[in-house]
Image 1 (cartoon, rainbow, N blue to C red):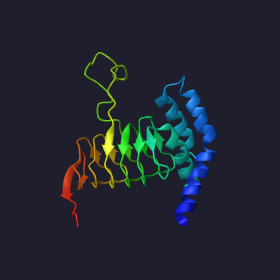
Image 2: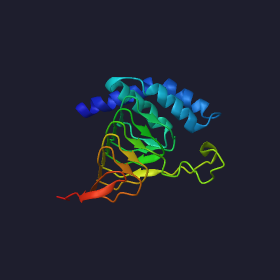
Image 3: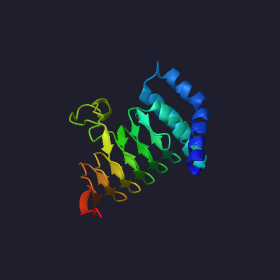
Image 4: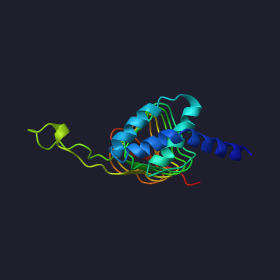
Length: 195
């Protein structure tokens, strides 16, 4: 019974968000989708409480590459890339910044986690040219299912299934499955038992 009520509430929130979704879809015909998503994200991030989490899910499930209907997205969390995938049961804590990524099923993100669009977003090889004019490459970062990314972690590379990233860690190289990593740059601290 609880599951039915929860699914109904998620559906109701999607219905409430329909005008925002429709406005986004219409504007996306003439405006860059990433810029538009960023603007809508900033506005919707300010809705407080559990209701805000549900309303944000009701919007993002129709405007991202994919977003499961039961995702919970915390207060002041911002998205910058439309090509984002969020699977079932994901929790994204408050004040996160999420770039181009795919987040696996049942993964948890603590507060203030930043998932960048890879580590090549900015070029700086020409000292004569302003960094802002040197461009860069956005790559999709893959976070495996059943991961835990601790508060304030900075993620620029893939994180394998079932891994834990310690709070405040900076992930610049791919993390294998089933390990705990920590530090700056993040290094494997230990393997998790499969028991």
